[in-house]
Image (cartoon, rainbow, N blue to C red; front, side, top):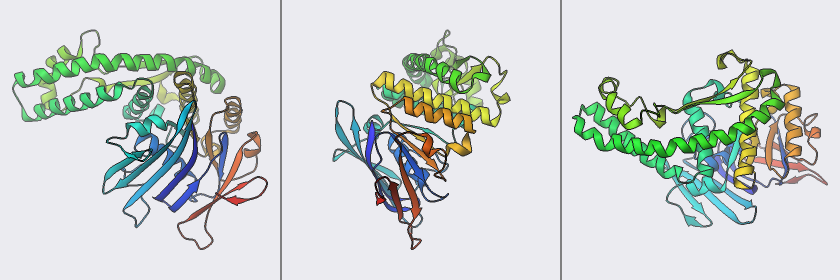
Length: 373
């Protein structure tokens, strides 16, 4: 997959911007605050329906504006080009694909898979379980499309059971929802297991290359309930305790997974640098697995590698990018020296504020001559 054109309106510092990246490695160079990360964020929002930055869905909106718009033109291998549009208007999404309105965002996610690594990514190792579940279920969605229907039904049934807990409803009212959750758990669990089993092979390969000092690695998956006993029975048995707490303590919404290295006793024993490198292992492994499962690479976004990783790891990433062409990647940096020259065939774009210091940003690329893109 290649994004051939990305346009954004009223997105953070941009009043209006248009970016036409190349099919391979693309460097976005510029000072802090110029909008480099915002371009990565725009692609990520199309892919996930949320930002990787803190804040709600309206947080990316430019100061003083009431809505924002993202448009992309995407080329796929052996498939027609796709035009996507996503707008956040009055606290709701409006989405289009090839000019047709969409009832939900799933077709955008399907057409625009984006894998991201940046300052926030160490949360994948050290952050709350929600981060790892989101990573896992987004991955599952792209190879198990039925997972989305299962998850929508799961959330509905879970809301109903939680409401009954707070209302102190009689036991008979719980039965249909607990049976539904048990049935859905039997669908969701195998899809997650298959995903992690396939991903683990790529994780092992990337870890051996990037963090050999941590030893061999495996993925430890905890489904969130006793699979052998069955979720329906476990929910019935925990109902009184759940009433006291006001929420459902067991189920697929409580799942978690972690990387277990044979030379590290606990994940909390990882240094900050090791946690970043391990998160990068997951990022690159997911990128490789997507290629294997879907037949084409996703877009890979790498934000400010120099500040997140030491020099040997950065150079290893650049070598990896060169080896995995025709993967499209977007990388950001505050300087042009050193790293850029280490990526053969890369296109280099300069991101900077306009001379009048307005919110409009200019992007320039160096080649036969500088030009505005």
